[in-house]
Image (cartoon, rainbow, N blue to C red; front, top):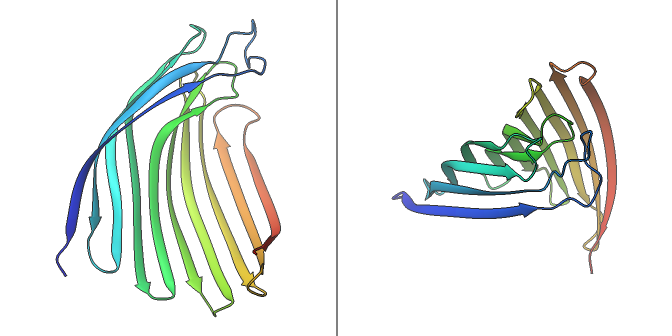
Length: 195
């Protein structure tokens, strides 16, 4: 099979307005506006591997001088590999601005890399697992978080109309800010009804 490639340019603009009280003393607004411009490539490398990757520049400007603007390199990766008709493997990565709840920093430069697997065990049972590593740089603050998450789950098709989802997830965060380390274990059970 011949590989197929296509290049693209992507641009986004955002405006964020907050109605809730400020996270910082003196009640400075956390409202901001920003953009992200990127150049990327999408490809179907083989019948089994496809996806896209891009790199660009982002800028998030806060209305209040109490918060430092966030700007720098952005990127994204989303690749999918199907080693069999029953199994799908996904590789993901991203870097973006996330709003902070820290009174010193308005925004967080948040980087993420992960892998996920889905496997159809039977016609009625699908297993799934994910692992990701993340880094959060609180711009305007010395705080930096590093952590990882993983999850294991199953989707049971009880009938055409009823699906049962069971998921266990674990999150471990290590921060250089006092009192901000944590671990979390979470089990969720959901029922989906389809008509």
